[in-house]
Length: 582
Image (tube, rainbow, N blue to C red; front, side, top):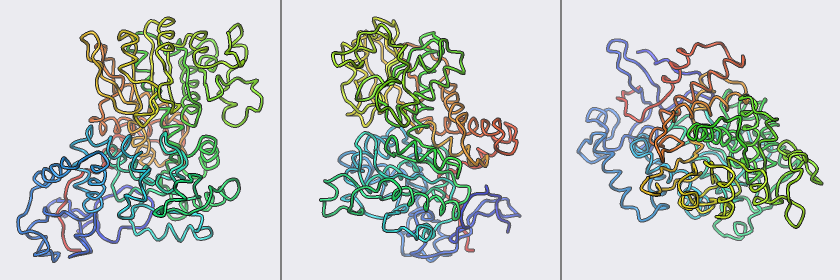
């Protein structure tokens, strides 16, 4: 027998099975090295009731399973019926997590078949509630926990992972989980959810993704006081103590999982920029909050601008919220406007506000990444400030007359009726994107925005919202979901053999998502694809990302046809292969 060709990925060969092709028949099968209970208990290998009669005899499973052999469709139907019996969204999450822990193929088959229904369960908004309750919902370990107690032996911790090749690693330090902040070790739920979308969206093999939570402590007093809390019980490490642990982790990843793509997830604002800049060139990595969000927001704005018949280079954009996501979006949109020929200067057309109002270059004590997104004082010459001398959102909307307003503040209700009506007075077809999530953190609801503008606004949100009926027209609310970009970016970077990810990769991803939406001009049409098309979108993004890496000259030259072939070959499908004894 011959082994099937496989992509070159990081890590050890898997000792449980090997993908092979029968040279006589061409049949693809798995040569399996375990049997009996060990086989049935392995979520990557378990077929449950779908083990064939011959497989039950070969691997010592007869009598361990009910006698009837199910088809994959019957098995999926049974699982879905049980999913529907769950009482609420958290219970549905727990059901799916348990399914993933016993049969990964069935889990991903179910997720693939019901993406629109289940992505909000395994990802935002439900995963936020799961992170808050993580230590109480915990059932079975998944991923790796690297804590302050492991200093000096992080490589040993990573080596303890009994796994085969590792392609994608999602790392979080748990400090800025969605819009709910420091969740201590509970941020692992986000890392697990992101990797589930890598598989559901981009076809990354479920055995080739690794979630890592870096437990450097927590400043959440409620967690410290919770007797069931599973993390280390001390305040968050800062400064050199923090970065020395991350340095050790990065060195261990490079040694044990060379070539793996690392996604940084939910680091606090300044820390996120510091981590990205410190490690971006040491291993192929990106920050999903800074760069992934920026790519998907740019895609939505491009689609919205096309929808209303304007040019991106003419837009006036305001970001309300200047954390990692807001700043990342602002920087990317500045580059996008400049590339599209914006006049006057692109950075004068993209304004950012934080809790102190408009960020100006002459603000006392301005430092860190906010220096890069600050507005020149000349831009506000002649504007009327608030009574405290700052420019608040209402002042900026009144005097700047933005055409695009993006909320990344986590402040529910911040886009008031007065602010939206003022905006539409200065722009006939405003683009309003309340992106904060979970759902209860949105700066405004789509229904309110569309009502206040009599349907004139183009709306997109960060969390899922139902369609809105205005004057007989049904408005589909597109979700600005990072899942449209990060799985494809990771896949494209992996198949191209990236050593780092330049900014052009994220611009290419934005254009790919925008192209996928197309030029749909129907009233109420969404500015984002349906999540049901996630796999198709991810394929396009992967090809675009790999192409951008080739264009940048940072990887070996590949034709588009070769990129497409590699992307297709790398996308795993949740189907059962025949098993043979190794």
